Amino acid sequence: MEIMQLHKSPLFLKIIFIVSLAIIFFIGAITFKHITVLKKTSTWISKSYEVNIELERLLSHVKDAETGQRGYLLSKNKSFLKPYDDSNEEIKKSYKRVAELTVNSRAQQRNLKKLQYLISRHLNYLSKTLYLVESKGYNEKIVSTNLVTGKEAMDSIRVEIEEMITTQKNLLQYRQNDYNSTMNYTPLLIYLTLLITLILITIAFIKMNRDVVLLKNTVHTLSVAIEVNNLSEIIGNFGSWQLNLETGTYTFSDNQYRLLGCEPQSFEACAHEYLKFIHPDDLEILTEKTQNIKSHNILPPFTYRIIRENGEVRYLKSMGQIVTISSDNKTFIGTTRDITSEIDDQILTEERNRELESNNKELSAFNYIASHDLQEPLRKIETFISRLVSKDFNNISASGQQYVGSIQKSTNRMRVLIEDLLQFSRTNKTEKNVVNADLNYLLENAKHDLAQAIEEKKAIIQSNNLPTLHIIPFQIQQLFINIIGNSLKYSKKDVAPIIKLTYSQIVSNEEEFLPNTHHCYHKIAIEDNGIGFEQEYAKNIFVLFNRLHNKNEYQGTGIGLAICKKIVENHKGFITAKGNLGVGSQFNIYLPVE
Image (cartoon, rainbow, N blue to C red):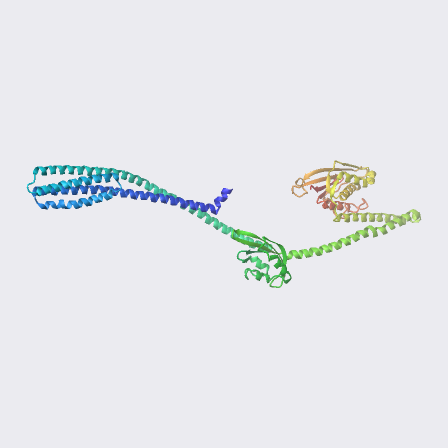
């Protein structure tokens, strides 16, 4: 991962650039050195040719001197002495030139010194012979001897010059070979230099092209991101701002202006202009919060009011923090959001909470009335009817006795209805003491409360081992009482009720009724063999005051199962009913696993 990041880093590009320059300079240096060697070799070859030519010229000048001397000796014509006289100067020039050309060759310098001696010796013999001939009474034998000696000196000169030419040819051959070798490698080196340069230029072009494409894509992405951010600010009803801590200059987004009720970029982005929109009562708060913005790394969220140009008051919430864009550039970025609707909703919620609190007080008063004031006259009616039946029932006519019975039944139903309403009201209360409770213990308490009805109907209640759950104990006990009581109430005539409670733990997607969240639930199924009901009424039986049977057929207020549903909802669970007319019914309770 670090290698991938290094490949994309600017440092990597700088390293590649420096290495490329180093390679180019290195190859350039080698090429320059190679060309210098080539030039030097070419110079040596030229000098070698020139040395040979100059040696040939030197030998020619010596021959000219000898030829002129012989011509004079034979003809006694002094015109033949002109080549002899001129040759001395020419010999010196040629010798000097050869000495200059062979200055770097020790062997040739040694040969050149020897050649100088031989030439001087030969010229001396030539001069001496001329002198003897021009003298009166010269000895021919001596002249002849000088001529022979001069010839020998000339032969020595030829041999020495040939030797020097041979040496120079060998050196020339060596330098020619070196030159040819250098010439053989020169095209390869130039081609290699061009190839490496071309490769580096190609790599640089490809990299630059990729960078340009990447830069283009980045610019496009950044442009889209800016537009998305602008659209997000409009949808989210917020704006953004920046403060360059080095220069002290501000930058406002377009929507920051819109929050103030102004057109984008309609005034200079600065603190002085912004403070003109602040509500006078909140100006001190804003100044206090932002006065140390340069020395703190964060601006905690705070709320203040502004007054738009049209006079509308809006609530804004700002926050921000410092970000370091580069080592020398720190910027404080912040966001400002319009929370006027939230403030209005909060005010509305507080008003509704006050109304709800008032309604709860009225409901508590109703509960008190229902539990005391309403039941008190009902108890008196029951007392008076009871005394009337015990003392004067026989003195009442038959129709009167029937009326008294109807009054007793009505007062009994009224008492049950009031008690059920109180029970439903208590279920709706928010006070919920959630603790770990054993369901087996709560079931036994429920059976104890229903003992008389169980005994009268000879009911059989079966259950497997129930777990200990985090619940509201008295509500779950009431749940058992209501559902088992419902099964007892709607049992078949002359058939002993059999009520079975089974427990299992399931996943939500295993049951069609539950949301498909893969959450685990405790499932408690309560099944009976009663009269059952049509499945189309499965949801209606949990509706408050809803009854499937006439009150003369089965007693009840239509509140018991509504209480059961409310209890299960208090535990964030679900309850369903499944009926089969004439066969029985089953209630399934699902409580979430915590």
